[in-house]
Amino acid sequence: MTGMTIRPATQKDVDKWYGARPLFGLRALVAELDGVVVALSGVYRSGDNYVAVCGSTPEMRRRKRDVIALIEKSKKLFKRYPFVLAFRSEEEPTSESLLRHIGFSRVGRTPSGDLYVWATKR
Image 1 (cartoon, one colour):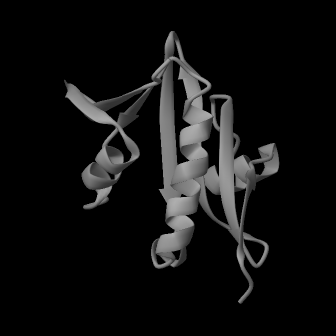
Image 2 (tube, rainbow, N blue to C red):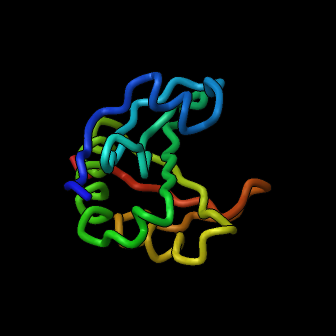
């Protein structure tokens, strides 16, 4: 097994990650291990809002240093926007602690779930 590579996502990466072309444009990073994408982290625009998305495979979750590296690079991506929203995943038990670790703050609940915001400090 070789090292992890974190790089900007291509449209092909995004399409393959989601199984089809998503209905939204996405600026994202991928973590790649041995030529296979094992995580994706990015931001898409929805109206006047910027929304974070993140997903990873079990293999990525076992690689704590690489998770931290992806988080740090994702934060640089988030800084391009005045704020970024995120929804906590109900299926991922560690999603709340991860969002808080990254710097998101819970602002309420919507029909889509718990809503968090990450504000750029300018």
